[in-house]
Length: 421
Ligand code: LLP
Image 1 (cartoon, rainbow, N blue to C red):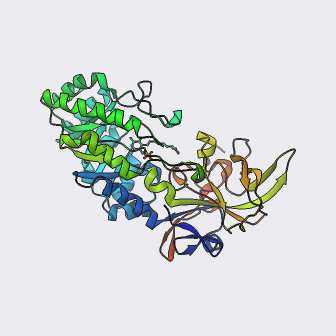
Image 2: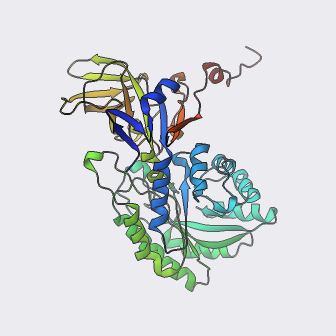
Image 3: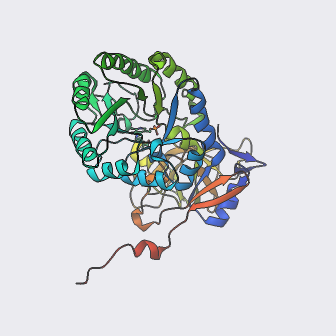
């Protein structure tokens, strides 16, 4: 459920008409709903009730300061994957003890920043990283709390580019070698082992891969405890999917996921961390765009928008589906026809949807891409010298621009011309 609904024929974000935002900020833009962000965070929080837990929002999904502050004030921790994300989390007011640091290639500088600023734990992904972490912590006179990310060799049954839990993926340490690597970690004075980490992929629409992976983590927990390690925390990653195509989807709910966690791991008495990103932010955002032209091609028509692949890359990159709806509600029973929805960027990949059944639209009409709150703005670029589009946050009947559109001058002046030119 989200808070983007038609009221008297006009699309609203909570209590604000989307067309009013468009009139003020111009198109294209992203708009996020505070109520939806909070609702999704609280669903996860409630799903783990009864277990000691922390929901660490995977801020790679949407790292705008206002989004982070909204979630942090509700009690969320953060999962960060770079020094930049760490700094963003801190700038939004998240204390170090609520930040977990994931990622397969943390640099020594990033590790140092987090050790100095305070960190809940590092999720270590390789032996060389472990050695650098140990050395860096010792040089600073600190002890780094760690989990080791294990790769359970489970098929997450998701898009190949976002599956992470198979042995051929670059992530984590093969679970078969975990006991050996934990033994190495225990011998390093700069490290304190606190638990185990696992993340098998993103946009999972089936709980079975989680059940398999968490079953393996439960076995490993007992084996490591028998080896003498203190395993008191389990970081279970993120990845729960969302219904991108509403007419045709029924993914598991956070409550189903929570029940699975309790069933597979509850008996171990560990503190549970989860790292959801998409399910918190995805359906809390729209990308709103204006129709520039409707073009008749040979055998097919094109709806040419002012938004493009640089603003929302998911369709080009993952063949992702986003529901596209008109901001003015189509009349009941209006006839829909297939059309290709495209942006103005000079490559054929700049196609949001092929032969999508859409109601009639004209130049100047507004359309909204649903489920664009996660991996939308954060993955955008200025390709074709198109300035990054603004982000807007709605809260009840209020809205605020939370990242404005840069001017062309600002964009151009980031370049510098060497003195010989
Ligand atoms: N934890 C770790 C270690 C991760 O690598 C990820 C996502 C998450 C948590 C959060 O997963 P989520 O709950 O959001 O599924 N750009 C792609 C998705 C990439 C996901 C990368 N890792 C997309 O637009 O579909």
